Image 1 (cartoon, rainbow, N blue to C red):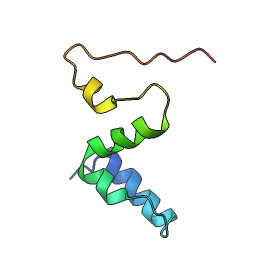
Image 2: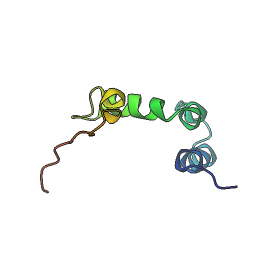
Image 3: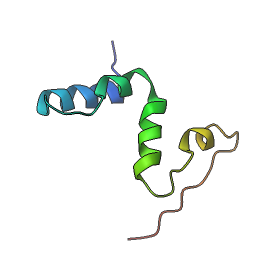
Image 4: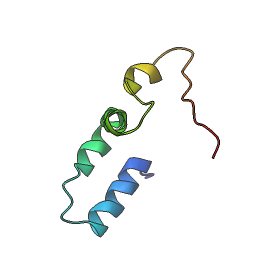
Length: 65
């Protein structure tokens, strides 16, 4: 049985940070919740869940570092 990336990360996080307030299991249950959180904290990710479902996708501009 292969585990999803969110399940792997959540398992590591729960083991390393047992008192974390982050809702790790909720992220495992629904990837939309991960994108909702990303939209709240990352510039350029506004309405991420709606944009990711567009037939031709979308571009997130990332300047060179």
